Image (cartoon, rainbow, N blue to C red):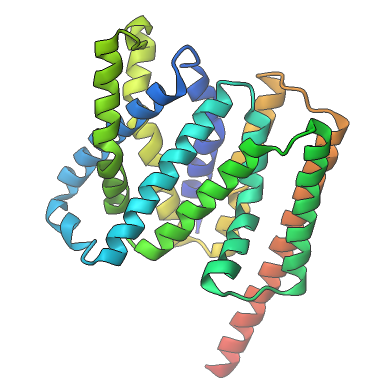
Length: 297
């Protein structure tokens, strides 16, 4: 349990501090940062797969069309999510990224109802309604829908759904996801280099090293999360996950000095209340299921 909590905190703190990391490259276009992130992620996971001697298993984990389609969709959705996050961080929308990842669990629940035909309790529907009100308040304040937050939440929820369909382990799954988009990323980097629009040469040596480490910054939190998921109850993992958007929100307010007015506080309060209601209802359902299972045993 103690190890699981440490792994979970490491994973979600890493994700929470990512805005500070990507802001180091704000002089680079988001597409160029994304391409480097994909390339160096593949290099990093290739080293891990080689060390674990698992290359022979790579082909066998996608034996049919359904699994190939699922891992292809994983690759597309996570790449879109990465791009949106990088773009939002470097264009002053870190508060919206925080909102998006607060909303993500609730969007995932909606997708479970739509695609997996799961049934929700009254309390869970109430949580989704409260979250919807929070988004509506922010939309009225901005005069437009908070599309960054919604896009991040939806793309990551779709990634989670495709991940569930694929059923791959973390290392080989991430390897396939980066292999699929690697050719496009590499071609793009060669193209902007040939066109003279590449900005990597303007980076300092320190920034260049950090960019090359973006593969490790991408993969390591995923491995820590996988370890936490193995060692902890799902309810505890669900609670720990709110460390990431909370950290991002605090960074947005106190480091990047993004405005956080009364209307935004009201909007976030609805989201937080929705998460409290959803977590409470889910915890009660989990305890009830365990009680029934123990009685049956």
